[in-house]
Each structure stands twice: as structure tokens, then as C-alpha cells.
Image (cartoon, rainbow, N blue to C red; front, side):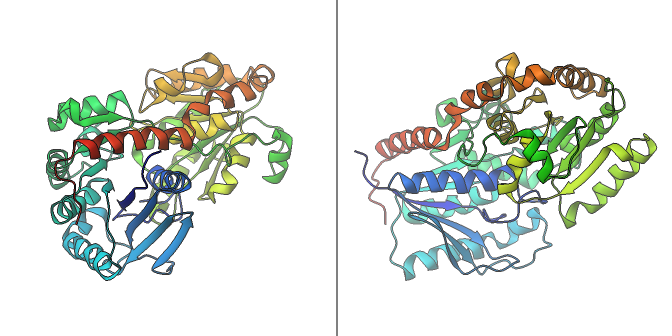
Length: 410
């Protein structure tokens, strides 16, 4: 039996308990919470360090057995862009150290999420003499290579390179991410472990389609679902254009779930595009919804689309398929690992409107046939259960700790 581990997880720029679908909240938040909870259920102790935010929480918040979220009073400006948090990292790092000392805590390993947290982890690694594991979730150089949206600053690129060189292990979600780490940052292949993201199969499960549609006040029209942050990299504009090319007896409805007050400018621009394309009556901007409500949306939809230019993995695909709904996605992130059978959906070569529309139209014309595969899709997601992902992560932790020289902690 593996000994109990005490883990310090770092998530500086975004609280894992924050409202999903916003500017800085998405798959990473879900990942941190779900992985930590599963590790806690397996008997390990996890402290997740993050910054205070609005609405305010208690400093210590229990997220489940053996897992707590620790809010540090270091950065209060809610409107601060992520890059500006860099200036406060030393204060945050000292806050972690002070909390540790005041509470007489020891840790076996640091697991940092995103490049800002990796910089914090570098300093803690030096102070505590324990190994650091890093998961970047997105890579600045990879995002820049798409040529979509604003370029990530050189500070981020150089910081990611520094973190790559000053950690014991990098967790990549896909083979593609491993290749990007090697290509853009010169990472050693031996330092990279590939562990996919997971899905909460207890939450994301099929709901009777008619029941789900009734709950969401939908009629019997065809429904296309898009879930994610409202930003250029997600390819929403291409999906709006694709909507004008989708064939069928009746025009389908596109429901877009995600966004917050920071994305209103982008939402208004997309609404303007919908008007210009004369499809404004077909598009519904739902906004952010609680994660517990998402299974209703997935189950009510006939197809879920991921028209992104870039994804580090694509957890939305796992959630949709766990609810039994097929996917049409661009060849990004882990889609080739997730969409391996025709029952699960289609991968399009790019997010051109015609390619998206062709694959979506094909699935919408096969609604009865597609509904026969609901349980098949869900069964195929079993390998992505958080229990399996946590087991694989623990094996990696064990290898790191065995290889770490003089791991006598504090």
C-alpha cells in the first residue's frame, strides 16, 4: 500500500472553486478540483493554495475528504490581467511559506498548475527541498503559433522555459503537447509524462433527452451545443458561419454556454455577426451555468461542437460523450485519442465553415441512429474516470519521489 502523501497544489491566477466559463476559469479549475478530490479519497492529503477573490470565501474551504482550499491575502484586484499577477508572485510565495510555518506543515511534493504557479513552485522547491511537478494546461508558444487572438507576451514564453528547466516532471495531457514542449522549450523527453484529463462520470451521465429539453424550455428543434470561454481561440465565429451552411429540413439552434462580464465585448461582436448572417434567431448565448447543470445541456443537444483553433486537451469532449452526445471537433488537443470510433463523432481537418457544417449536418440527419449509441459513448469514457487518472498520477508521483535525491523534506 502506498504511503500517505502530503501535496501542495498551486493555482495562483484562478481559484479552483471560481465560477466556470469566465475569462480565467475553465478546464484547469475543474482539473485541479477533481484530481485533488480523487487523491483525497485515496487517502492522500492535498492543500490547494490560491488567491482571495470575489465573492469572498473563508480562508480555508474544505473541498472533500483530505482536501482543502487555502485563500491567501496577497492579490485582491479582480480586474487584474493574468500577466500583471507576475509582479505579486513573490508576495504570494511568501504567503504560502508563512502559512506552512504557522501551521507546522510538511509536504512531500509540489504540483503546480499554469506557468505563474510554476514560478511559485520553483521558489518553494528551493526552500523546501522537495520535487515540483508542473502542468501548464496551455502553452504560450503553442497559442502564438495559431496566429489567432492577441500574442502571449515574451515574459510568459521565457517564464515557461524557466519552469521547464526547474522542475522534476512535466505532466502533458497529450502526445502533441509533449512535442510542443520539446519543440518550443527544449524540454527533455524523459522529463515529460503523458497523462490525459479526466471526467466526473458521477456527474456527467445521460439524462433523458425529452426531460432535459423540458427543463431547458426547448422544443423539438435540432440543437447544437458549444461549451467554453468566449474568446477567439474557441472558433465561435467560424461556428456561426458554419450555421448558415448546415443542411436539413429545419434550421438548427446553436446554444453557446460560457462567458462572463469580461467577455461581453466579444459576445456583442458575435451577436452582431449573427445579425449580419441573418441567423440571430437561431443562436442563444446562455452565459455561464453551474457545472451541475451542464449534463442537462449535453443531454438535450443532438451534437456538441468544438471548433477551436487550439485546445490543450478538450475536457468538454469527455463531458459530452459521458452524457451520450456525439462530438464534431477540430483536430486539436486530445481529440484523436477521444474520438476514435465513428459512434463518438467526427474530427474535421480544420474549422472552416464548410467542413464544420458538413460533419454537423451528417450527424443531425442521423438522430435516431445516433441515439442508439448513447451508452456506447459513455462506456468508452470509462478509461478517463478521475479514479484512473489519479492512479496514474500517483504512479508518477511515486517514480519522482524515488528518483529525487535527498528527499528529506523540510
